[in-house]
Image (cartoon, rainbow, N blue to C red; front, side, top):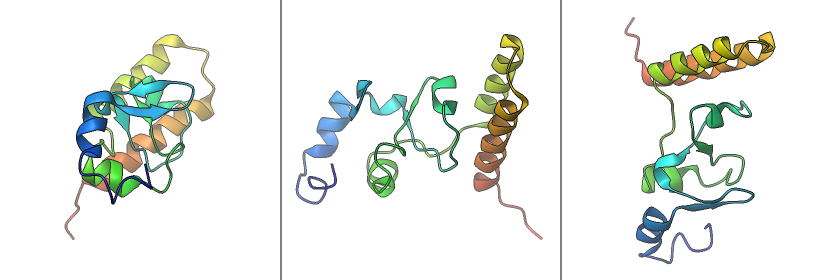
Length: 115
């Protein structure tokens, strides 16, 4: 994708139509992709998405700004993931803390606090 980005006007349409290739997964529709800034393996899968960051670490601008891949999660999604983890039980506290850290990071990146 890096080599094609500056040269192809049709690349955006092609990826929007056919999805982004992710090794071991296949073509993933843009709507099922996410770009998580915080490292939390498995988190994207909990919300039914594929995190592109591990596969394409240098292409955030391309995927987020140009193709519109979501770069954060909503508070509602965070709450749903925490509920899922609680319902499944048997989760390590570190796993729940990782989810909470991603939620906090995502929410704080979109919230502006005036002094």
